[in-house]
Image (cartoon, rainbow, N blue to C red; front, side):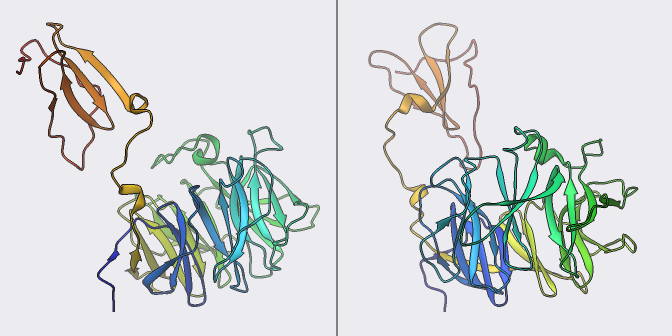
Length: 348
């Protein structure tokens, strides 16, 4: 039974192991069942937690957060508990996932001066991180032999935090393959694909990835040798920014919701998730420095009133006994740079 207080939320960063789904919402991590249902809040720190990844044994969840720095990696029990800090990069870091032998994998731009990513692994117990000698590897997954690394390079998001769609320039994400510990060069796969190849994931002897090759984001797959590339899911209405795979199902974020995609048939199913939350972020509260929210102030041609834009709303203000007038901007819209015209009337 769903409690009356349960609400729908905005869901991000899905990660599944077995019957457990961990995701982010309201800047915190939550846990629910693989098929959705009532969610339990795992974190409540004021800083945002994101990029959740459950360990191969299903006992831990690693994630990035801004607890002690701009952003670093932490790990905590899936059942809940105190997060343990794993890295001390202070930013320039992105959580990637787990290695088959249970180490946390991440990229850092710190060594490259912010200009190039380097892959690392670190024990969930902490300690020194071990670099993987691949330059500008922005995402990665291990193949079926647990030794071959499939990784993406380049990408607008890695370079400029840009989620542009239908980009076909020289900065498109590429898919590469390399054997761990090998002296051989990495090999590029699908060099003539003609579209970005984002977020590689491994399952069932194939590499699954996201691409907008068809005109919209969808789930695609390719054999580990680079053959038999195919579109798996139908086109999705919004860009897919996060995804994960467990068993025979991919879990995608799209818009405000999470979806399960069958790897066999491509069938898409929206997960129904309920949050019991106080919606603390939506409470009406006093602003300590209200002028810090001021976006624009434009004096009328007569010099008698001023149009003020703040927090997406517009009001007219004037000195002395004239009352303030607030415009009825729709709740779902935001106003910008309001200006009074020549015919602006003075209200008393």
